[in-house]
Length: 418
Ligand SMILES: CC(C)(COP(=O)(O)OP(=O)(O)OC[C@H]1O[C@@H](n2cnc3c(N)ncnc32)[C@H](O)[C@@H]1OP(=O)(O)O)[C@@H](O)C(=O)NCCC(=O)NCCS
Image 1 (cartoon, helix red, strand yellow):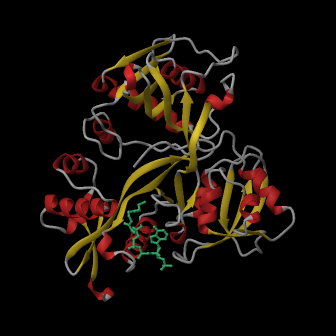
Image 2 (image 1 turned 30 degrees about the vertical axis):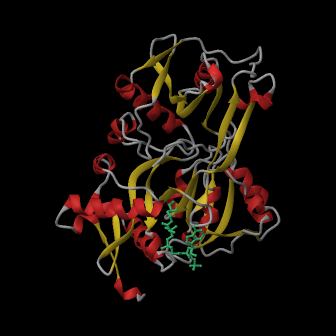
Image 3 (image 1 turned 180 degrees about the vertical axis):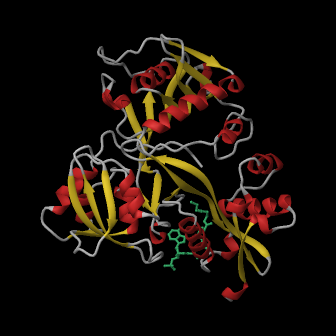
């Protein structure tokens, strides 16, 4: 096939918006192996800004696409920066490995740089795809798996008081949105969630963002009367041989404090008829430390979650806070977007506030742009990457100095699906 026949355009260049969306969703869903139905199209139509969605056409046929949402990400120290949250990257099985995704990513990333967006983020279906485009995994997650029949909590379990209620999804929308917004602002790695997503999340259509008619919502109300946490979950019923062995599947559980989250996890574990509780959780969540026998709070798996692609190194490093005062000269190579890379001097004062600017000094550390994505939020150390041969530490002290500067506690965490 000749590359001449590939054309990429945004959905707002079509005369008919509904037709453009159908073509886009059709190509994307084919890539992921889903049929397109009307409910999905309607849900998607409420989320998509046509100007942000690229459709790839091969000889006039839609064969792939890539979209993005304008969100905010919280950096270490609590500053929010705008990010382009890349989503729906897909190429039809018939047209794979002809460079379609490469062209989509190149155009998309260039448009973000031109618009002044400092960072792109995504979730990868497979971890081998995106480092070539400059993305690096910056947060991890665990799928917790709790044996509800055997687990016992320690006597020093940090109680929080307050009360729990199961509420109707439609009544929970506003309070969940409020708790979520608080949590994402105080969490390193937290992503914003647009208001328009909540009706989809609380709706009946099972889209990737989260809706399904089976979801229940439990809220936690503090002693002062305000709702400060929620769990969105469903119960998979198992009455094999007349015995209840149900599983609670948590979709999202958030609280304004770790204690509130622990109270919600515990309430689900102690729910009648339940044999196990599963769900996504931060890798260093205190839930792993509050059981008498910690093996009863296990993980089914742990893996990368959010991938970060720096697009404006000076802005990102000047916006995040650092753990100690110090100075570092970094060289960042970016073969795809040469104007993004360069040599940068980072100076951090005693309050952890940084200034970062381009420099002609000799670098102490040399790294690729995807490795900068990996260390940006502090979830991965420079020395870890150096041991793997992915970062070059050019002066003896620089590796430990960089790790002291970028260190965070707790680890970054990012739960919003997009
Ligand atoms: C992943 C996907 C978008 C790639 O599209 P594509 O048009 O075939 O990609 P390209 O032809 O531009 O390939 C670019 C490079 O990535 C590599 N690559 C593509 N898919 C890969 C994968 N799944 N794992 C590892 N490498 C991959 C290609 O081999 C190629 O490498 P090269 O430049 O060294 O030759 C496509 O296979 C797809 O739609 N997969 C199913 C849906 C999906 O997983 N989407 C990603 C969502 S996060």
